[in-house]
Length: 195
Image 1: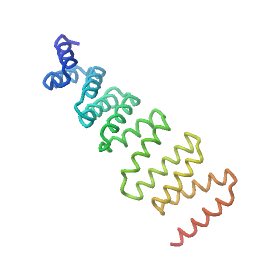
Image 2: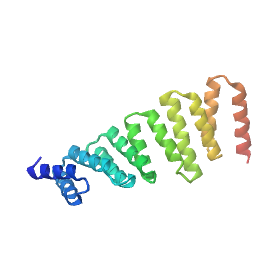
Image 3: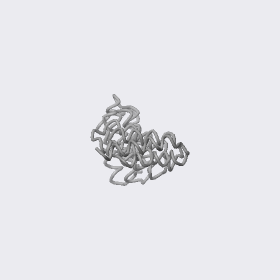
Image 4: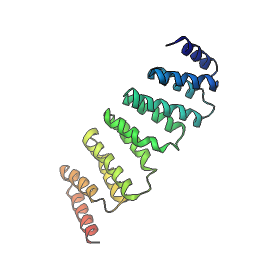
């Protein structure tokens, strides 16, 4: 780190609202590819943001650097989630966050983020597909068949054309030898395909 960078860091630590110093420091850190220092700068600026929306901008930038430049999926996801919590309008962060959580196999967090994303999906088929995906993760990765069935049922409820959700729920009920539920789902499937 150069002497000028140290001076700028000190200036930003002393006054996080010194826009000129923070912009110059950001430019220098990018030119040196000093990603961890840049993430630390963004974290500091987020901690001292004037409001949650301003903080979310810095947190999103930190997440992008961690994710894209440092190839640190865990830190990237943490910053993206913090940005989303600070500013729930940053819905566009949820999909890349799910990708990062999938990459590091953080399945409960993946489901949590997907659940937050479902609330913002307007298309019935896409919402059903996302809920179905949550069910698959719960069944296959988490081992929670009860929550998986709830997701499969919710996916079918979101889009009655999502028959794979019925198949998946029926398969689990068959494994659990819940024959009455298997019969109910078969009946529902027949009625749906006849329509």
